[in-house]
Image 1 (tube, helix red, strand yellow):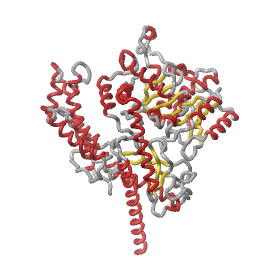
Image 2 (image 1 turned 90 degrees about the vertical axis):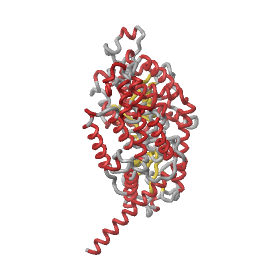
Image 3 (image 1 turned 180 degrees about the vertical axis):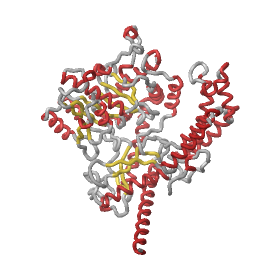
Image 4 (image 1 turned 60 degrees about the horizontal axis):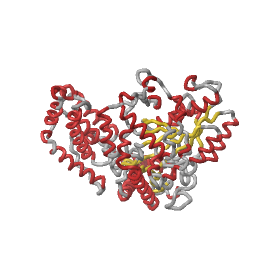
Length: 601
């Protein structure tokens, strides 16, 4: 299918839904269409922008002239919001209907051109726009042009479909706009975040009264905080200096951070931001499941000491992005303690296993971490952001403490007015704890655990489908809810690993020989993924195995929709196969045309 046109993204055109096999995703879209009609018909005088405009402008008592300048909070805030929310719901349904699948078809240039056209249209009319026309138009555009993580064929990233109750809770936070940098801006939210973090600390295995933490923007910020505290504590102890004040001086031994070759790139980014430099990070080899090799870690720590270097931190991963691998946490903790290093665990993805009785044992030893990161906008089904940073001992937070006399004066705190300012890298900060608290109290750990288990079952089922299909090859069994695989071109049988035609790949990851065939496999797998995107049929992930040379490109399914069925995952994998065959056919046609041209010449 050729690249899309501007029309693919023009939400004014009611594009008929593409013919697709029946799925729960399609059912949801049909329901959305029905709800669109219901929502439009239930508003009484809101059948159109004019009616909504009248409601919105008339909600302010003596402020009828405010119109779009009405506020979301205050005594009349709910009245101003109500018709606008109706508009947003209508527009979301319209956009989803015209999108008709996991992503709108079209090439990025066409998508950008269509967005530019609509934005220019509404921006140009903004001065004279009436009612909710701009909100309606741009929301429909956003819905049409967004990847839908609730669609069974959208399975590329750790990008969850948020729970409706969490989104509704997030709306309350947006409307009230409390900021967590001082008690007098967020009295209830300050108390709620403190209670939530104590509960999450206990879930991890920490003492809730001795631990401390904060809500963050996600794993990247949490990892930065963990490594900052590691720098301040370990390097500070070695030099007798307050590193947060003096900086990293030349008097210190060269600091080192050790993490696995499969760890998140934010570890290197944090080292750069902290003045340690990316080269301070040493990459520890991994096994075939992409878990840190603790024998190699021990050897590398020993080598650091022999060279006169200072191991500042060991960063273990509980749930790698590509395979969901969990490093041996207890062994990592023992080695970090032996060498006086801080242990930070990046559990942004795998931390969701704590909710599942079945998967929680994978995180044995997590409670030994000096600090850790969790992301509930992954296996927690929250709208972003819902990151969490925790330390086992609150006293280790000392170097982050800050006093701003206009936010947390000493006399206020002495009088019993608490402040969260010294727990975060940010000043202004949303009350993101609220949506998590609402979700936990609504579903409980047991209810959320069932969602985690459902996604795990989907991954196991998808892996079985890959193992039994002659044109697909599985990298390794799923640990959490993600797995890697690749499409095998027709002549690539000889690339298979030593473990059999339909088995998991051989010991070294990129199965079989490299060279021309590996290059072809890489090229076709990368291209078939773009084909699926261009046609609007699927959003599938792409990555590369550690190592060198061709033959390392892999596709990835990240399954975070607990309402998806095993049959829908199988259909998604069959769509991958069909796209791979289409790419091969195009290559063959192009080769034949070239050959014919040479003969004619």
